[in-house]
Image (cartoon, rainbow, N blue to C red):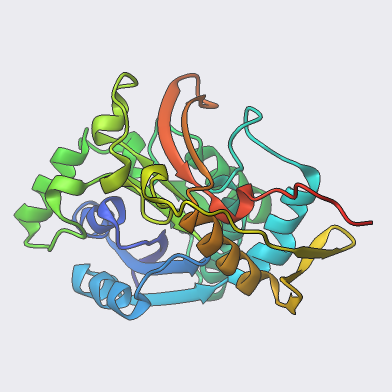
Amino acid sequence: MKEKVVLAYSGGLDTSVIIPWLKENYDFEVIAVSVNVGQKDDFEAVAKKAKESGASKFFAIDKTKELVDDYIFPMIKAGAKYENEYLLGTSIARPIIAKALVDVAKSEGANYIVHGATGKGNDQVRFELGIKALAPNIKIIAPWRIWNIKSRKQEIEYLKEKGIELPFKENSSYSRDENLFHISHEGLDLENPSNTPDYKNLLQWVTPLEETPDQGEIIQIDFEQGIPTKLNAEKLNGVELIKKLNEIGGKHGVGVIDLVENRLVGMKSRGVYETPGGTIEPVKKIL
């Protein structure tokens, strides 16, 4: 029997390349796992793409509520920000994704977990430390550290050679990460720090400031033991509340950061981050 490998699969560029690359270079049975942390994905379409690309199985695991209750709200209560600016929108979801991957690997008897994080970024560290903490015997494959592909352009060429449809329009291939709390944008023109972001074409959630309403909006958020429980007197669970705050904040241009940050591996990276709901702060506290 073939050895099994669990792949953290999003259906984006990197993971679309990784399935055929694994099939070509390893005699593995590839099990694709997409972890739902609130991203606006069509998981039926993602499953179809994974199997057409060569995966033997596909799992979509919903961790949205757990992400909010056990990760996002404790982070907000702690006031945690990376370099005192960035609200940890991408990184906060990585431990729960690692946990889901380990759970599937154990249940399927897989000895390997594969991720598509770049060899120049923080996510490889987040994923791998999470996996090793929970399952130290599982081996990790990080294609970006070992394959001959050197750029997104070469990834696109590889998919074309394999006859696999690109997961985006070729001329708008920003590297994006999305969950319920946040969406990030990297690559293309953003790699040059002197370029002003084209917010009108870049932003997905937040309205550019010049297009926002002239009138502001007052909202009321009720908290219990530091956890938001009501919005404008309406009791909501954490997932619903964050969704509505994202809509309100996005409408008014709240929550966009253009940041050149320091990565753990010793280099700098430029990204644009949208976190509208998480950025909304009270101007008046009622005790």
